[in-house]
Length: 182
Image (cartoon, rainbow, N blue to C red; front, side, top):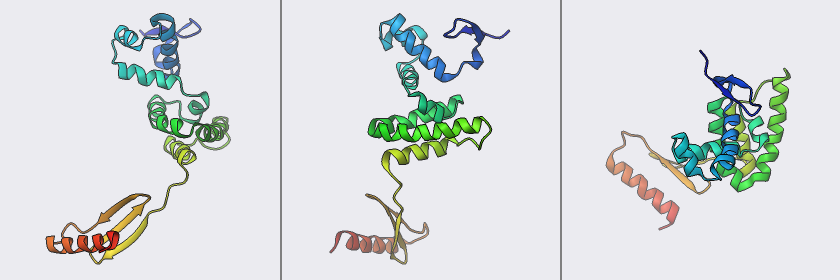
């Protein structure tokens, strides 16, 4: 026997067809109606952690355009929401504008015109909308044993794992002199 639950319309439907976003919105509505906006009381009543409930409530508050741009699959929508939280707080207008473009393409793909955009691509485009294009790595050879890659304010040094301690120290000294001046 299938488990049934009532949705917003009050009509019973199989629980497995309940989309995560709808469920999250139902939790948000119940938070105000039944628990007077107290997350702790609701989490206790549902027997879930406050962090779990908080993630669902944040998912419910996602703008519809974001939901349409991301996938409707449960895990992908949750991953998308987790990644979007800092982007929306940093550059909401830019992210929403790009999400609207992506959502339009996703709807066209669902209608048979083109292909769906994968969630990692959606997130990359939204991240670029929020923070600008990714800076290319600058690669420089410090000496024959050490290579430096720089992206923005971060530096990554690479060397062979079979390099001797003396050779590595000499290469690091060379890097320190070049980078900080001597």
